[in-house]
Length: 207
Ligand SMILES: Cc1cc2nc3c(=O)[nH]c(=O)nc-3n(C[C@H](O)[C@H](O)[C@H](O)COP(=O)(O)O)c2cc1C
Image (cartoon, rainbow, N blue to C red; front, side, top):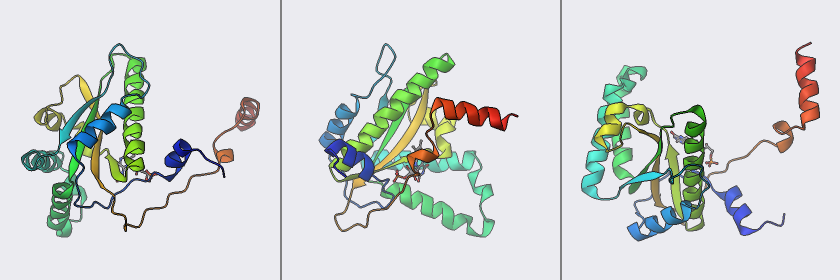
């Protein structure tokens, strides 16, 4: 298939959950964010805000807040109690090892419409980060772990009540030798349909 480079990056990008210990320089992060900010938005102000966790001391604070939030939300009660200690250590170790994290937020809209527009624009912004990162051999995992809905967690990491977290992004360089994940998509014919066919399906199903 003849594809231009944008299309190729869109198709090839994968979520990278295997971290390397190689961080990404802050000036590169700022370049990614600047490019990402050309995402479409439909509000007076650009809706995205980003908190950057890059320094060791910031990571310690961030991970403590994540672990405290897991306790507060009673997440561990869902686990097999014999393995809780291990699961906690695994989670904590994982987040301690992430070289750099971004907390990406959007304003909470006052109407359904403005809320949708804010989440839509900030999601496009996050995808831009992922695509530009991929083009530069940088891996991203977009996470929506339960802590993002915890008011105390939000407050303790500096997210105001008027904003919502759309994603925590774990970021590290992709190791050249790393085996990249494969991800497939369903054929378009499975989920795209012309209006006439849709309406006839719809009326058949309602007969
Ligand atoms: C809104 C959103 C939330 C996500 N949350 C998580 C998450 O909490 N944990 C995780 O491991 N991956 C998360 N992902 C990544 C998806 O699991 C991943 O995109 C999906 O498996 C498709 O794989 P791909 O990104 O490699 O195409 C999230 C993705 C999106 C778009």
